[in-house]
Length: 396
Image (cartoon, rainbow, N blue to C red):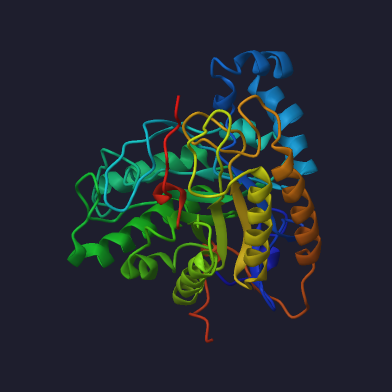
C-alpha cells in the first residue's frame, strides 16, 4: 500500500502514518472520519412516521438526504455517511451461542449517496456469511463462480472517479465458522480459503476502481476474527474495520480497544471504528435496557468513547450507530418521529467539533500510503459489536 501519493491526489482518500495514522482527502487535507451508520430512509416509512416523511420531505429520498440527513449531520459534526444497510426484520441480535435471522435493507443507492455532498462508503456483499444470517452460504472463494460474482459486484457498484467516495466495505461481521445456524469453513483450510477470499474480492475492486480505499469486512470485538483470517486479510486491505459495542462499566471499553490494538499490530493496518453505539429505554422501546439509563447518559458515553478512540494513534475515526430509531434496533440519534434526542445530540455535537478540530492537523514527516493497488510496505517494524450486544426486546 505504499506508494507515491501524487498518483492518487484528487482521485480518492488515502491513509498515511506520521506520528499517528490518519486519512487525507483527495486534495491532501487531513480528515478524521466521524460518521453515522444505518442512515436509511426506510426508517421513516413506517405507519407511525410515514406522514412525517411526506410532510417534511415530500416522500422523497433525495429531498430527505439533501434537506434532512446531510444538513443535520454537518451541524452535529459528522462528516461521513457510513454503512447504510439497516436492521429491519427478525428479533434479537446475534449472540455467541444462539442463531438468529435478521433481515437488512439494501441501504441507500450509490447514485443517491454520490449526490449527497458528503464523503460516503459503499459495500460489496461478496459472501453471505454474516453472524446474523440465519441461512449462511459457505461458497468456496477458490471456485471460479466466486470471482465471477465479485466482478459483477465491482463493475456494477464501483465509482472510480468520485472524490466523495471514502472506500469499499465487504461483509458485515463475517463468521468463518462454525456458524450458530450451521455451516462454516473447515478450520484446516481456513488460511487458503481466507487468502483466496480477500485476493479475489480486492482484485475485482481494483480492476474497476484503482483509486479508492478498501475498508474490508466489519469485524466485531466480541465475535472476534480468527488469526489466519487476519493474516490473510492484511496484504489486501487498506483499513481494518471494526465494530465495538462495549457494555457499560469500568474496563469494558479499554478491553475492546486493547483487542483492536492487538489486531492492528498483527495486521499493521490502521483502524476505522466502523460501527459503535449505546442505547437506553425509549418511548417506542421501553425494554431496550442493558446499556445506558437515559439519553443524557448516552451522550456522556459517546464523549468517553470518542475521546478514547481519538487517543489511539491507529484510529482513523468512528461511525456512530445509528441515525433514527426504528422498532427493531430500538435506538438512534433521532427518535422515531424524526426529532433529535437533544440530551444526546448536544453532547455529540460538542464532542465531534472539538475532536475533529484537535485531530485535523498532523505533524511533519509523513509516511504516505495510497491504496492496495499501488503495492504495500513490508510489515511495520515496530464487541461487543452490535450483532452480539445483549438485547431486551421491545415491549408492546
